[in-house]
Amino acid sequence: DAMVIQNPRYQVTQFGKPVTLSCSQTLNHNVMYWYQQKSSQAPKLLFHYYDKDFNNEADTPDNFQSRRPNTSFCFLDIRSPGLGDAAMYLCATSRESTDKPHEQYFGPGTRLTVT
Amino acid sequence: GQNIDQPTEMTATEGAIVQINCTYQTSGFNGLFWYQQHAGEAPTFLSYNVLDGLEEKGRFSSFLSRSKGYSYLLLKELQMKDSASYLCAVKDSNYQLIWGAGTKLIIKP
Image (cartoon, rainbow over the protein chains, first blue to last red):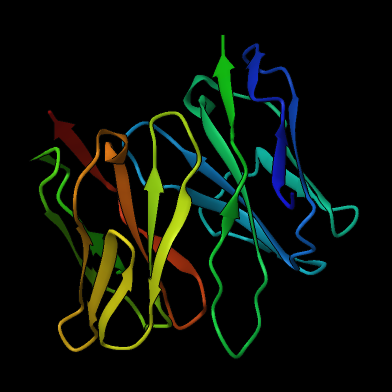
């Protein structure tokens, strides 16, 4: 089945220790997104790739970086995690075009704990 | 600024009908989406409205009024598995998805 996969599902890291979360997709979608979601809050878009074009949200901290080496994979790097970065990180994909907006397909998420 | 408003929490009875409202103020409009999110899981797509009116999909229906900046999600014949958060999201003029905080729906037997 075509899907969005995130690894790991649960990640524990220490304060200040770099961590990388990964996402892969078999949907061949051209857009990939990274969201941060805290309990009972809306998903917060961190950045997205439209094909190879990287789009950073204005309020995304510099501590967060992303890489998309190819169509299928996307990584979220947190260079120096703080306690406030503990959250669920959601990867999503969509097949965007100018004629019609499309729904986003989400991976299962990675729950990040910072100790 | 851009804003999506939904009730924080609603309670309904198994077998009943519930309507979850969403009002929005965004810079432009390119469609409204409803997602379901079970606790600890990722959101899953439910419905999409871009024109005024009602879209029906089995037990779930979604309504849109663009002039009023208003949508609702109607759930019929409620089942216990429908206990989840329901998120309203709007695509603005830049095709960015603006998310509401979600409505937590509690179903009681």
